[in-house]
Amino acid sequence: MPRATRISFPKGYGSAKEVLAWAGVRARLEEARAYWLATTRAGGAPHVVPVDGLWIDDVWYYGGARDTVHRRTVAQNPHAVMHLADPFQAVIVEGVVRGERPSPELGQRLADASNTKYADYGYQNDAASYADVLALFPTRVLAWTAFPATRHASSSTRPCLQGKASTPEHSPVRPPVSRTARAAA
Image (cartoon, rainbow, N blue to C red; front, top):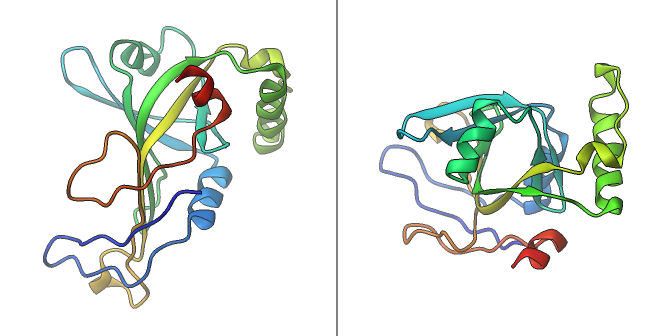
């Protein structure tokens, strides 16, 4: 399990009063129906798009047609950021995107999760639907609630969960390595 640490906010933004538990952050990632994905185009311009996805085993899985901008951008530059929409219950995941060919067992878990989460779409996926899926492997996860502190009486916190791409202003915390990530490492 990742280790969450309290960080310092810039002056005027308040201070963290507690560290969020990873279980709560993970639950928000698992339960979200829509995610915002930020990538970088070949010329350096940003691209942001809302997409469906599944947070399973601390990896975010998502798809899209091969000719979508977000698929083309991660093929050129796999570094991406995904975040949930609520700025006062923020969850931001930085990482590297790879095309994955999950095992039949993981493919079925993805299909089952998708069929439950997006049942209102009216279609049924099977393991083969996830034979070629994109996966964001986190290097750092940032989350906070009630931010900035001066606007809300409740806590202003942010655990910092980091991997290899950590920066000196944050304390390092490593997300667990998934079965898929271990196999590729």
